[in-house]
Length: 188
Image 1 (cartoon, rainbow, N blue to C red):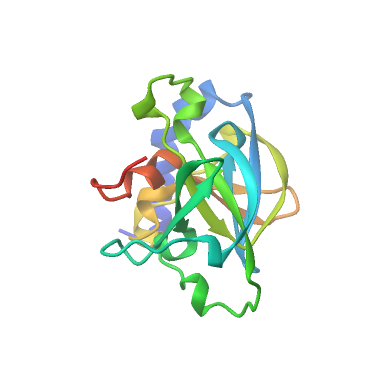
Image 2 (tube, rainbow, N blue to C red):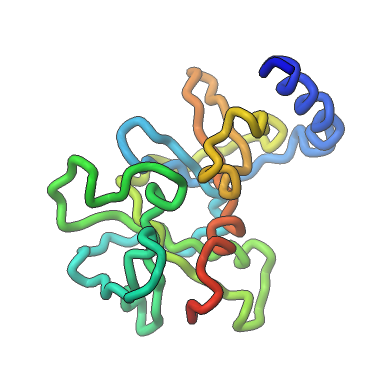
């Protein structure tokens, strides 16, 4: 089976879902991991954007390499995640940056569901290169790529992709997928 056949089958199976949501507009935060990698997350899943110094992140032993450690965020523990490394790109320390300050998005994916119990209020700090802008996106325009074309490390975190009117492709991430990747023994 060729890629175009898979893509057309995927498109046909999602056509009914896309018709239902065709006019639903959602606001997203667009950001870069590196100069060439554009992504976005629903704004309803984001609590804030921070400027952090790497020296303020306390490493925790025996965690996956993409877990950078913990950060004191308003008196609470915020687990800091190297988002690029998590989704299969080079870790932040292998990037061509000499900055001691970086940007972190505070991801709160259950905030969108208006979850009020303590267990549902999970926050993660996603270390990124820079925030670009807010985007209004028609949810029906978010396309699901064929699984065969997606890096296996990226697949659990990818909601789909959106083609901007000027032709740029932006990956849409799934906040719940990012939280689900955290080890079972991490503490809020």
